[in-house]
Image 1 (cartoon, rainbow, N blue to C red):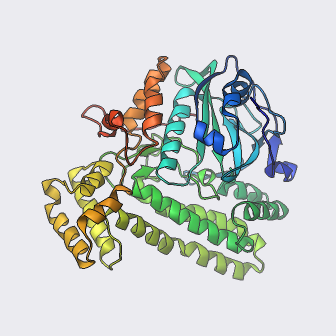
Image 2: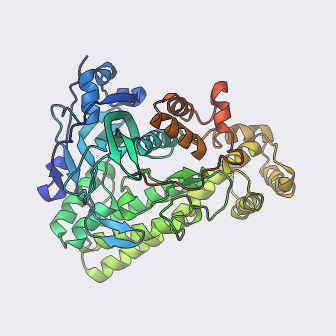
Length: 471
């Protein structure tokens, strides 16, 4: 066994005002709940070493591995549209960066204790949100959607106080980076142009080496976010808390709090208990992304030369989002409908299907899967005729179209009620439902027969209508 990890910590080489250096706070009795062995191997970690006492101690924050440079990152952000000048990692510690088969990745502990950014919080996480993020982030990865990932979940042997005393846990999160729109806002708000320049150069080198300067960075982030939000929409995913500090400039889904996959479709669906006015509803997500990117663009303007010309160039870059998003959205939904080519009326065809789904309260995932198997219910009869005519116009063979559709329309997603069942069982000491769900949801296209019941929509009385941040 070899617990040695080859760190190469580029963020820690940035100026000291970018972070606060500190080690995680040890926990009382760490115990491994689940280790993501395929991810561990891709990071070139020794799986058996991670399962050892020292490995679990590292994953819990009780042991800092050689070469790590633990730190809490500084950032700011708009939360539900309200400006907060200092946020930062209040319950997370970045251990460092590793170079694996998929390139450079951050390794971060969430729930690892208080930091200078905790704002009176305890810096801990309770078991529920740790298990939710583990399942949902790995499911998103299996669906091919850019996302942070879960390396491990560890129980702490301690309780945390929220609405009640709850078991504590730590999540080891892996990401292309943890730089957010809010990271740029932190320096922009302080008029720290030197810090903005250093951060821009860092992100360009790390994520967008082919982009040129701050305008190139803005254009690259616009394109990445357009693809990401279209991907969310194509699987009925609702992030729930799209604050600027929860938008990764690397184009990954980050910060799984009150997230959810829709059951019954409605464009205005909201799950987050704190989203009282629907700011982050399903259908609002593209518009929120534009708003967040506009804040990002504002941060970059001081680096873009003459102010008037910079504002014009930045505005043009932000205004490119709707067209890029629409193209990505149509591309994904055409594949969901088995369409290879494009017609001007495709957006309307997709829209009419969604309208019927909303009127009928049809399940998002189950409806698209039923379409894949050509077994839609009677209310879809007229629309089905339009769809078949559209296939015929491009000379598509329906069986070939359905083969493609099976690779775009998942059978199984992390159903809200199943996630809540797994969390409730785990709090009671039974991790079996969590392990089953974690195993099942990484095979969304062709689940094992024993996991098929997990694909069923909730029965009456099983619906989960609200989700919570859980911090």
